Image (cartoon, rainbow, N blue to C red; front, side):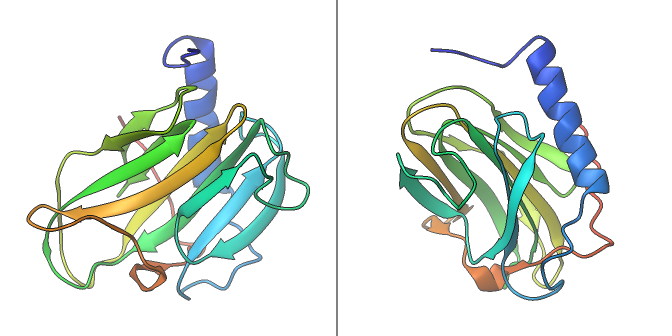
Length: 183
């Protein structure tokens, strides 16, 4: 199993993710509407954006297919950006299911790091206290190395069942969305 959790590639990916977060807000989406801004790259290093679109949720199992035209079936990456607003205040965790790697930034901090070549794996964040009606910046980076490709983002109320986060919890980024990741 190939692991990219240390060394220069880790630094390159994190710096590239931070630069994309800080300086590359898509203009082909309608800010404030429901959904997620999704940008696909034709490489694993988030270097060459080829498609930007709006998705309702992060719940994708592409298998061995391409996620979009001009995106290869293997060796691609993606960035998902949105504001998250929960309807009820409470304590929540995020669960990311991915084949292969994923990094989740939430409210300006790295919440989950799992940038590995792997079969489908689920990882859970620490607990966040969220306030109803508050917009929290969320950004998820993903890469597919080879063969099966899956990325799913769940929200887990501490005393409830997890669920794929629906579109009405998300609003698209605007020019004011500035992620300032810190570890």
